[in-house]
Length: 132
Image (tube, rainbow, N blue to C red; front, top):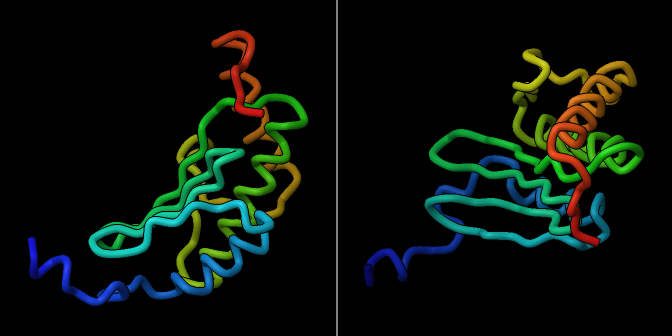
């Protein structure tokens, strides 16, 4: 444990992490929480719950389904903006498992499909209890 505590904080820093965090701060106007250091790195936007994580060579992005309507569309647009940042910093292509296809970042039809999924989940669970 002592050896792990004495390791440099940026050991095995994921490629693009500094760019991703700086750009996310701009995107979310500073409202992000960061866990920075081995073996995992993550950033979260608490108001939306959007989270980007890196662990053992794998990137992931998650977002809770607590938004619907116009709020859901705004969250989807923010997810697209953050995915664009990660793609530019890492050279990877984002994939949307709910739609079963690579993300077409900024494509209005794709944004509407993803927003529709949020709305379907909201209908299934009833009134949302999204954070204010």
